[in-house]
Length: 120
Image (cartoon, rainbow, N blue to C red; front, side, top):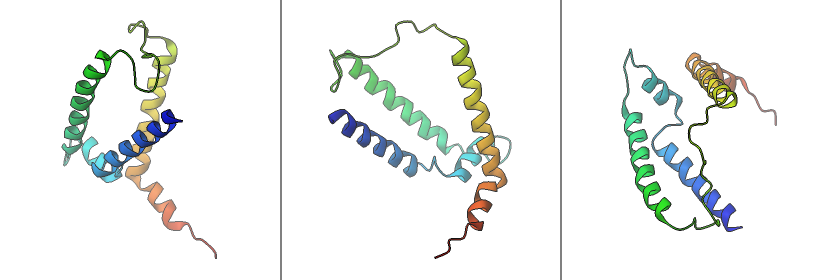
């Protein structure tokens, strides 16, 4: 039960961080991805801050004997395994992210929400 509560709190904190940094704002993300036009580099600072925080905390966490809510750390034994499923997953992730960005850029998702009518 404590693992579930901790997971919920971490998810809420993560979502709050995304909202505060506006990483869930499609216009902000598209401005960051538009490196040839009016590029907005503010999300790069958000990502750099996240990486610095991760590296610092991971250093201290991995020095401890065991995690707080488990009996052992579950880390990969071999970091050099690159197989077909890993490559296929990366390709699917890249294609789906690109499609989402293009749909958002075209405004298809916004137009669809404007046409929804609720009959009461």
